[in-house]
Length: 324
Length: 256
Image (cartoon, rainbow over all chains, first blue to last red):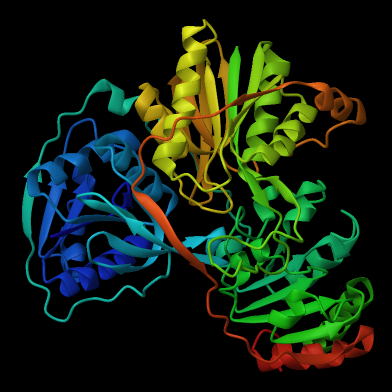
């Protein structure tokens, strides 16, 4: 059987886990085996029905008084004990921070290979997986050995899909033998998100600035444009490396992935590491002095020119339209 | 305090990737190389820890002879010592890489130079395996906090933070411990000229590592299919502004 880890934060499911379930269900169908889900912590109990809705015929609920909050090694131990009990042919996690982390711990505990961020799996022996490199700018075809096969599913490799006739899932409860070692790393406190600002991953409009903005002060006009459009500012890596803007605004492989309706990329050349961060934008408008810049080639619309002249003109024009 | 920081040499890829004809590597004939971004921040963090608490810092990489360049970059930033686990340049999978790092840590420990902190990047820019630090921690029996964006050492313990849903999660562990760092934890310094000169003269400890373990083997690389559309050029310079606003109205972002 295929086992999928359904990741949650204090009971709230990670949507990427539903994609992992869908990915797992299709893999299970091809291999003609059932799909089971593993849920960790008693707070996850209500997610059994959700797991069934996305194709799991059985749910392994791992509970322990010390599984109150996220603890990567304890979660991994929980998965390992389910693996020992049910001997799956593959274990899948979501290609999220936690998913990759927990599956890496599982792999280290079992002593097997793990393939992170897979987009395709050929279930023969050994598995042939296609996985992301360079944040998705490049793909690798690789052979994955071991029983079980351990892998994570790249975000948005598939769209999460409910099954038509989901039954009541069978729930098997298990209490793992957790060692103190498994709980050395656990969430011991939190600071909550600041309220009020438009968050970069959820913004409908992102106004991006790159080296072409020229200085930290140059961002004032991008701020103004973003605020007129109800959006927020994002930046390329060079801008944070130069200390012009904080890293929290960085869009790209080592920053934030954005998915706005419109990305206005100002003075950004379009390095691959940046493009993987903004490729989910529905539309891209590039403002760049270089018509040959990769960003211009990948944009839907472009203005060729210096953003320091173009952006103020656009702001004036928008204000006219708004006053209309 | 003794700090180990592990880095990876990766190509500075720029606007597009080209593969070698055998589809085994990125064609790097016209590319420079750099330290993978998360690891560059790990190096900076190691230097700051030693500046604040005293002690020694060691940078380690597994790679070809020319990876010496990235070790010297780290030395120029202020790391004290460099170890090159020299390979023929072919990729080692995560298990083999972690085992080779473990061997170094254990031999230092046997020589009375145990590390208090082992810093890694959260994932390498190229292979994105998300597991080297965790595997090393597991074999050594150490705790590992991954994905950290803040680190503070107090006495024999460390408090680390990572981002989650716009907020932060806080972890506290006693040392020795492993940390996998994310970019943004700090802003890496540019090496000074004297730092660079000093780094040039430093000895690099070269070790030929023993390759043990595997299980994830590259077959070939391929470029993702590009959904290339046509770009509509709206004009040049500020005169294009009215057409920009037309587009914004068409997209429903500015009311028309």
